[in-house]
Amino acid sequence: MIPEMLIHLTLWGNNAQILRTYHILLGILATFFTILSASLIDVIENIYIKIFSIIESISISLLAAFSLGTKSNNVRAAWRKLNTAIIRFNANLIDKKEVIQAYEDGEALIGGVSYSSEQIENLKMVNLKMYQILMYNNIF
Image (cartoon, rainbow, N blue to C red; front, top):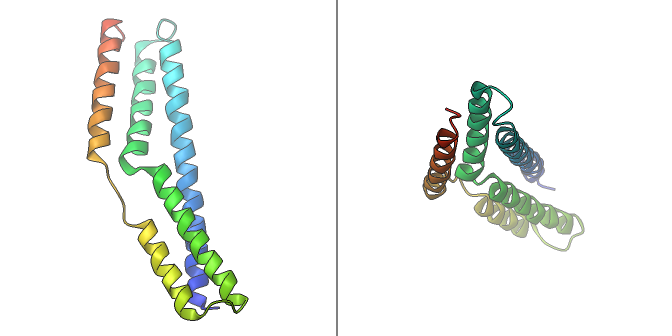
């Protein structure tokens, strides 16, 4: 096999796992702190509600702004495409050109870092509504 392709295959596999881990971690943090801040409004001090709300907002913003779920799916799809090409190459079903084409297709699938300002604007509106609710309930 082409050694460079095996390196890329390993990198893409690791990147997909890291992105998925961040995606799940940020989702858990956002959910946990949303529930915690909403359910403990009358029970704990306002400073803790503020901290919980900040953690929640940052988690949701990072998830939405960088589309971590989509990015990790794209990296995993690229890994699958290259992995399949390597398996076929090793079985003498395709030649090097097709493995290189699978790599190029995978790179196109992965793309660059995407940043969604539209999703950020939508989140700002959600956070504004949340802030207004907290202000109404004298949390801030």
